[in-house]
Length: 280
Image 1 (cartoon, rainbow, N blue to C red):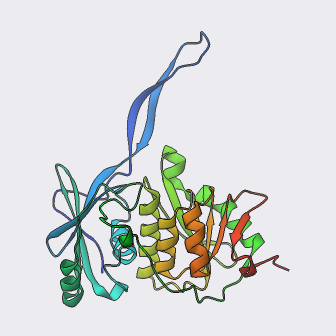
Image 2 (cartoon, rainbow, N blue to C red):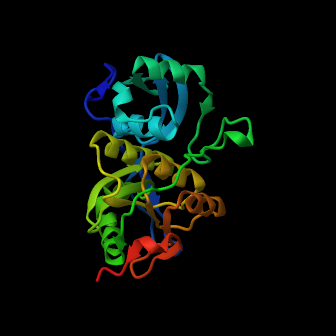
Image 3 (cartoon, rainbow, N blue to C red):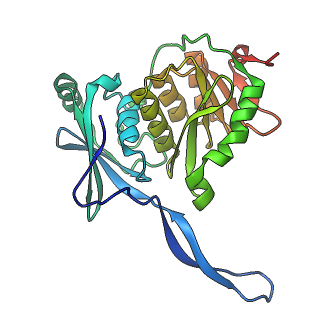
């Protein structure tokens, strides 16, 4: 199942574009002119069965992964098999990401469709009641154990794996690390939710065993990020920045391991420390 690109595009869509700039010192030195790559941020309209569902501001890379991950974490599908194909069309106002669902799943989706617009940061725009806050349900059944040196290795390798981040300094990344800390997959996007959705989509499409590794995210860990991880079935999240109170509450309720403020020499464990070992 591969993404088909609409006729208005030719080849891969650019993820970074050059922009003229001047570097101006605070001293009396002359400014330095040049160009700097900027991360592309484009509106991506996810469309199910010809019916628009959501407009997300995203980096136009790995859009098939995005379609799968978004569909899972939004509760539109429960498995990769319920998506039959995806297709990208480029137009003057942005991109349309068509997701072809299995007939029964499409009927269920359209029956409960809700409008969402422009969700790049908050993750809950468009809901009408507090009871509609996302909740994956269930507890992490994984008995996975993660060695602290594996976390250190994943963090050390992540910088070098963020190609678009190194080029633009303007995107987030989400990675899947194997139990030895080696990075199996990395996805980047201007939106932290999008980066995680893309990663989840990649793991879905390759049928990756979620009890054979852990998630690493470069952003803060909000409750939406925990919810997405729970939908995937991941038991361990490592975040570069701090978690929110609701993220911690949800992680505890799901029996997940939440590590944050991850640095080269330390990681802070907020819940689920029993899954971590010293690697001996």
